[in-house]
Length: 237
Image (cartoon, rainbow, N blue to C red):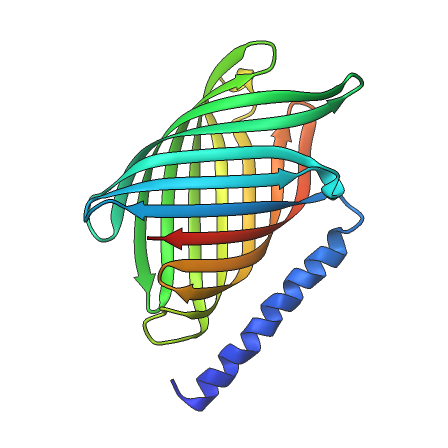
């Protein structure tokens, strides 16, 4: 890396931080919240991993904890760049009513495919996931949802092999109801989550990042947009 390239990368890090700060200031008077996301991959052998996620979400303006998501999967590596997984997730939402808080559970079985590749030093990932959802209000209702995510992790100030250093992460995920959409929001489009973050790779086993998501949720009464600040910790052992 020459001197001019190093200077350009040093200039990118504060620019990303500034964008996130502007996002916080812009959405302060709108519907917003915060998510904490912990994602862990436990290697069993050369072919098999156990995946585990924990996600905590706040309600609007951080009033209280509104959602807990627990997710795990059995992951099989087809090769160095591709993997498939079979998993289960439990999601619980708390809604405030006149009589108090009401707990709404959702159970999911899911299958996913991941493709990793590189564009020079940029780490790219495509993830396709199919979920069988069992959502309970008065009784459980079944539906299926497809999700497609594309992400790019861009080293900014990092060593040659990107084993540690500062990076930016850009991604978008689209959620589509593919079966029994009348049991959820009645629409093919369920959600859209564009996301930008700045992070630090401590080692190949741990990343920490802070970012912003513009969360579009389609509901029967119309679209709802929330502005989410997210802290994410990713570990790999």
